[in-house]
Length: 338
Image (cartoon, rainbow, N blue to C red):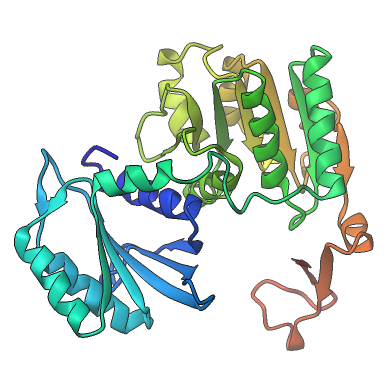
């Protein structure tokens, strides 16, 4: 753990604890966070699930974190009802911070102080593969195998269609995992919104080895040109295309691929020459009659909403009085089961 970029360091800590036994990791840092940057849960030795808050402090030049960070953590414990807290830094802690931790421990407060050395050591004690990596459902495995077969057949592109809630991101992440195991070094995941890029990055974490890095770019930040998985916006990538070797990325994945027919998005897709281009969407149909098939080829696999319900992985909920925003009478919501 190094560097003073607090935003990236915050996400690095989130990924580290996710890999090392914490569950339900949420990034909540920002205005009104009451002193918490991360929320998570973890089972203690008795089996009790304890809520945690984590305060993250990035410092420069081997700096130190003082008592104020502990004060913020105590405040967050009260606000969120957490039983345990940690202050994480890429630097170290002042002697007064260590003393304050010990004083609070005598009064029943469970507060940990994690420096960069501790976080690196913690990661080294856990297996490379994420402890929450799940076995694929049969239809997901079918699609991953179809994509791998497509690649080995010499195809340079492919797409699949899957109804919302059935795990498109899981399929994309496991395909990436398989490609990394077969020698690929990097992947680029493109989408059209900042929130989606952040969600995709976090959703990939359980499918990657601990030493496989992830990064996010938007708001003018350049995409990483290193090994690992890079997530970002096509709008931002467009400005950096001249500086990127077209064949640099081994894999390019386009989420919500129906957006890829936008002029700027198409420019990105057409400029990049990965070993494999993958498009995925739940809604391939466009009002203008254009088809994403011309970018990604015909769908290799399709899993519809009806099939998802028939397989028992989706349920339909009829909201009372149609109070949900944007729902018209006669509509419904599909929810993932299990």
